[in-house]
Amino acid sequence: QVHLLESGGGLVEAGGSLRLSCAGTGEISGPYAMGWYRQTPGKQRDLVAAITSTDKTYYADSVKGRFTIARDSAKNTVSLQMNSLKPEDTADYYCAARWGILLLSGQGNYWGQGTQVTVSS
Image (tube, rainbow, N blue to C red; front, side):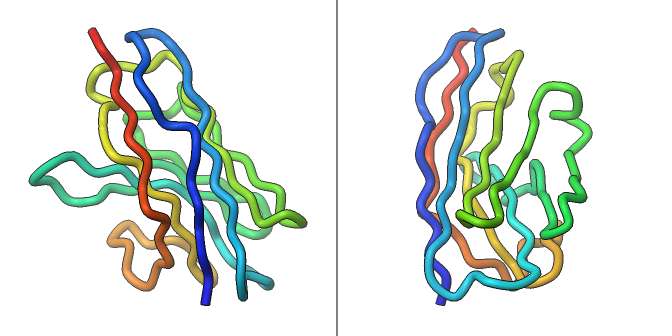
């Protein structure tokens, strides 16, 4: 069993920055990918950024150049630095982990409880 705990959400003005962090505990050794999804009411949960155990990264087009994902595999932590935030980045952000790679669908993921990010215009 894997447990993920997020921190770092909050309210920020457009153009500002936030940093999300996620700590994984439990049976999370081996080639686990980690990453972040986000979801707004009534919409599906979308993959925002992911990083594999070999530090290959993926970013959704909407966040490229603004968000940076990083991980510390020794500590089973992953962070998401979000810069130049826009109102459309407002969502609940979920940390995720999965053996191998993260899928766009989110299938097979372990999930954190979510943290809210609100960007005011």
